[in-house]
View (cartoon, rainbow, N blue to C red):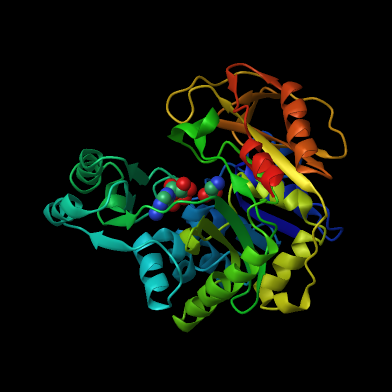
Length: 424
Ligand code: AMP
Ligand code: GLY
């Protein structure tokens, strides 16, 4: 069977390597893929947002199953279009992807169905938003309604900062239409947990929990990025917390989407904060997280394609999803300067890998047969071991064997998790 995977980052590389393990897979096409993914799949130069191009490609390549991984094609209705060709798809339809595509939609959904989240107000008018800020507790959180490449969230430490953020979104339109509606949200505190889940709209199966490291610099300093590293499982996410989340967040969300006539089939990502008042939803994503996927999928024991096919067919309850009793760590190696300005085009030297090591390529292209850096996040160095400490050490030992010009990575991935484990 031929598979089609839409997307071209580290997440997609991890998904493709897992899918490849299924013996019924003959060929995997990646649209657009990248220079590293090219070692595992045939890459075609069609952008993930070129829905017409993807559909035309699918029509002529005898595709038996498709996975749409990134948020923007899902929000644009890529899954709907592929389904219309008769291709089973892993990934939500447009009417369900809105759970990530519009933060206003997701906040209203949570309010309507009593799913715990931060208190909020919605504004389109700058004057009204500015006047609300006068009395709002500080710090406060300002969010653009639509997709903004993970940059649409500002934690304002002062009233002035909050006002500047509102002006830049509502007046200067720095996020275009995505920021023409904003949310002002209560600032929550507590450890963060990412829980990706498989769901067919009825059954929800949480994956192993993980912890992202979103800031660019050590000690959670610097700008917000797509994610500079991950570990799994997340030590804050105890069995008791997991039970509570299932009862108060996961099942109510799946039921709410169904009740709204928007059944969610695919990977629903719960970005959670474990606050003193219990777990609350910070955000939903309509897709696998990146780099969360790079630590979660290497711990999956059950065949990924089997699970994805069951999700697409509405038969997830029939699959027993199993996880390895191990830990994983991912150190993202980036181009120094990311997430703002950075130099690229440097050749990458990759080492031989041990059985418990993975390198997932994100921002690299092939230039005359040589892999060179082409993006901010270049790759993820991943290690799977029986303990978290060994996994973190293993990921750093692997990163040290990888060479490219202008390489930068955080030195403290997993440290907070290791400290939490010591306390337990
Ligand atoms: P998001 O892009 O929605 O994941 O937000 C980026 C980051 O901002 C999250 O991972 C949190 O660390 C932080 N954040 C978002 N919303 C809140 C909130 N209501 N309170 C505190 N921190 C938040
Ligand atoms: N790592 C966070 C995300 O994928 O949104």
